[in-house]
Amino acid sequence: MSIKSIFRFLGLLMLIPILYILGNLVYGTFTDYQPLQVEAVEQYTSSDKSIISDSTLSFMIWNTGYGGLGKDMSFFYDAGYYYTSGKHQIRQDLPTVQHNITGAIDLLKNDDSDFYLFQEVDYDSKRSYYINQFEKFGDTKTGYASYFTKNLDVQRIPIPLLEFWRVYGKAKSGLGTYSRYEAKAAKRLQLPGAYDWPDYIFQLDRCIGYHTYPLKNGKELVVLNIHNSAYDKGGFMKKKQVEFFKQLVTNEYEKGNYVVAGGDWNQCPPGVSEQLFLKQKVEDFNQTNIPKDLFPSDWTWAYDDTVPTNRKMNEVYDPETSMMALIDFYLVSPNVEVLSVKGINQQFEFSDHQPVKMEIRLK
Image (cartoon, rainbow, N blue to C red; front, side, top):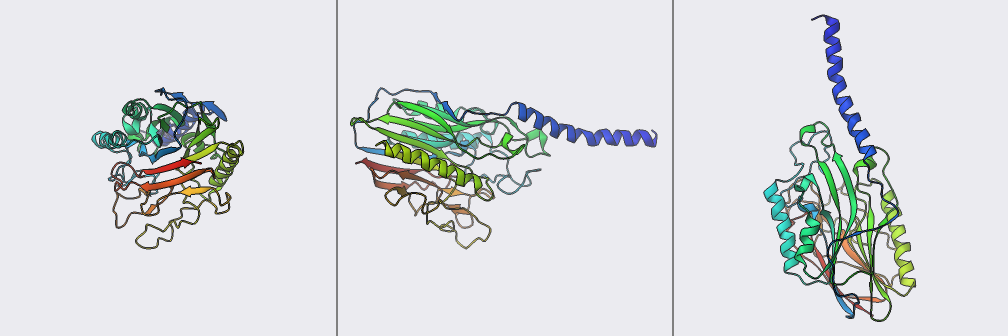
């Protein structure tokens, strides 16, 4: 073989990874999920209760981690890897995913809350072996209405980039809302803020699950399922999203409605230190707070500051060394009284987040 032929062969070899990357970008761009600002959401099950007559109601929020982020998960992306997975995991094995999903189902079976606001509920994803968790959870709560608000629909997430034979793959996921009552309206509200191309192709399209329920006094209870931006260096998108959220909920309150919002905010409540659950101070741990002056003082941030709700997945869970924070909580309007709020400490057995229960009274 001549020198010229060798160089031609080497050139072709170098061209293969370039074509692979370009192919993924082209495919991702043309199949990108582009939701409208306001969309109807999918309803799976129904309830025969159409009007809320009780003044006391109970809620549970939980980011279920799509069944794939249990206590033994050390996620390569959270550990700072992109091109390879290093010594970290891309996904948990099938028996572990099934164990995590069963843990969520058992929680639903043994709890009697009126509303469940879940995040990262997979619908059709490689990372959770294509198990439809939204429908499984809905089947568990007989007599509840269930609503799926999609915020992730990517045909192929091609990372780790250099491990093309076992990439993250297809992901379809969203917010699962389960309620004892039938919603009068259920919508998907797109949140502002977006990544630049090509990052936006593979990131979540952040949104709010908006649900309204008629009350016997003629007003409405507005229930919002929250999952704000996570990988947002500088917090620019978070700022836009909470400002959008403030406008939305204050408008509802001014109409005379009651507002309960809960979920994974990916920020700490106002005034709560991100270092609260750390055994020792970590200099580069930067979990921002929702601004203290965002809402008037008669709005209530409801949380349990004795139980961490999130752990960082740069390593498997270790109660002594894991970085933990409180980023899952509620906000209620001035016409809602918080009777109790309690974090459920599962030692992160089934997810990188932990559930939080709340009981309220409508004034």
